[in-house]
Structures are given as C-alpha cells and as structure tokens.
Length: 92
Picture (cartoon, one colour):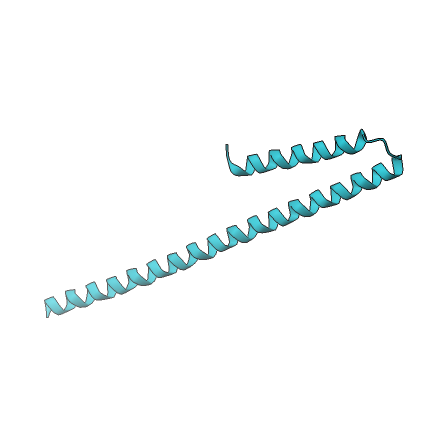
C-alpha cells in the first residue's frame, strides 16, 4: 500500500473520530457546531499544508531532472564535438 493511501486513510479516520467524539459529547448544540467547525478548519489547513509539501517536492524533483537532462545534453554535445574533431584529424 502506498504511503499516500495510508496518510489519506489516517486523515479520514482521524476526522471521522473527531466528528463522532464531538457529536456524542454532552454539550450544547452551538458549542458542538463550533468544535466541528474548528476541527474542519484544522483538517483543511493540514491537508493544504500536506498538498503544498507534495507540490514543492514534485517541483524539486522536476528541477533536478531538468538539470540532469541539461547536463547529459551538454556532455553529449561535448563528446560529439570531440568525436568529430578526432574524425577530421584522422582524415587529414
């Protein structure tokens, strides 16, 4: 099972547990609604932070791959130029 599925399952379980705990707590309806609203906002903030971390990680990986590709292209061009030079020199 991938880590993203595990994290998603844990977050959903935590949210469901928090909502059920609040709903079955012996408090006024207004207090319960405030708690649900706060837990919902906390969960939303947590999910946004995790999403932003994921986007940053993917962006970093893309930049690394781009730099590696540019290095490989430069190395290929250099080897090509060297090979062409050797061929010209051997034909002379």
